[in-house]
Image 1 (cartoon, rainbow, N blue to C red):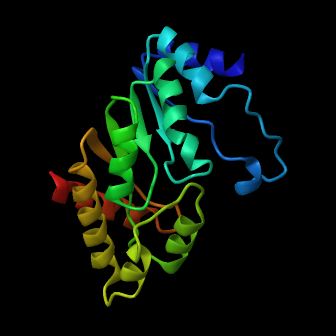
Image 2: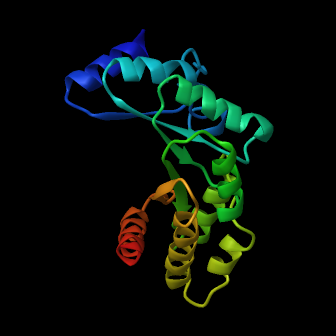
Image 3: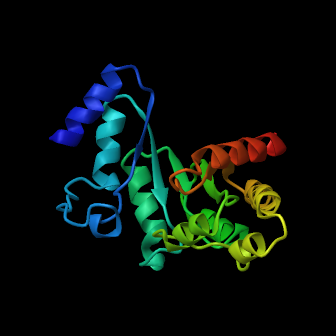
Length: 197
């Protein structure tokens, strides 16, 4: 009931869209003592969001286990009302294209990591769930003479490759929120966004 109430409140507040995800198990986050609650996953939440009059986006991690079921899971979400799919890091444009080819016909938005600030940010990004970065992506940035420039160039290059994938309608630039580095990550994302215009 809590999530149904949230959807009603979001729609009543004038929001036009909602992103429905299962979320990570609490053991993977900052509150391992919290009780996991997975009473409504996106396959059941998407229809409720559509019924509330919201545009519904969902996420899929093509390389996350069980990878063989990811396409069918996305199809189930789409049948339930999902209209856009955010594709988690899957190892580059090739795996994302394969996932999109096999998946339902909806607009796809691929996630692109922006790593420019510190080794700590890269380590946290690599440890994130559902992560599949192109071979050498992080080492190419961290081993560069100027990691900030290398990180921006790597993000622009990967985003360009992903935007060339059929069904892809956009990219979602993201960085790991390492305390004290938020402003630098935001500036880098703005630079990547300008380069992609």
